[in-house]
Length: 121
Image (tube, rainbow, N blue to C red; front, side, top):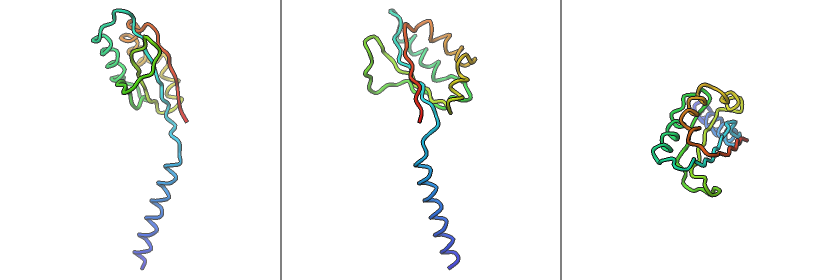
């Protein structure tokens, strides 16, 4: 009987933990960049800039997405880069960081214009 009670209690705690976890909103921040490249920028150059974003080494950067499935962008905008940061503090610390500066070495010479959107819960 004690074993049954222990098993039932464990199942209840597991279920309760899952309900609490599902109700919590993530604290990560999505940094969405829509990009318009300079005229004459080649596909290889664009891929180089996207790889620079994907390969960025920054402690607070969790994930990077560069392959859009569907885009509804203003004319001239060709790509979207999404960076997921651990939290707002990580995003703020990213500004002017060595990681951002290294990314910008490849990205900025090719970028005509970009728009950014930062999103969290």
